[in-house]
Length: 132
Image (cartoon, rainbow, N blue to C red; front, side, top):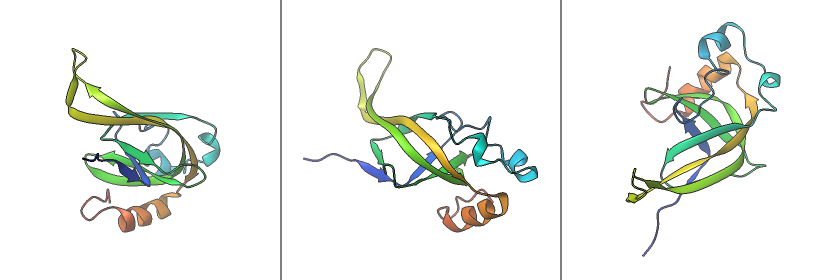
């Protein structure tokens, strides 16, 4: 008997899962690059990542990726600050089909400049998943 636990070096988030689109906007970033100084001391939260996941712990970086309609846009690197794996419960509090989800907090430690962001995304996104 075993259990499924995924180890990730990439935090890929939709807006619904907590990607900070109010601060990290591609159009604004392309016109006037967002500085790390604007976000570096902010503690960001994410929630609702499917399955049980463990992200690399500080001092190891985790890539920050925005999921836009199932396409990946790499933004930079983060340090995980906390992680929680929880059962997914239905509205009656019953465990839903043995499902798990992961939530946590992170701090942004590096933001890619627009030109590098484009090149990195094209190179590192899974085949067919690049935003560009």
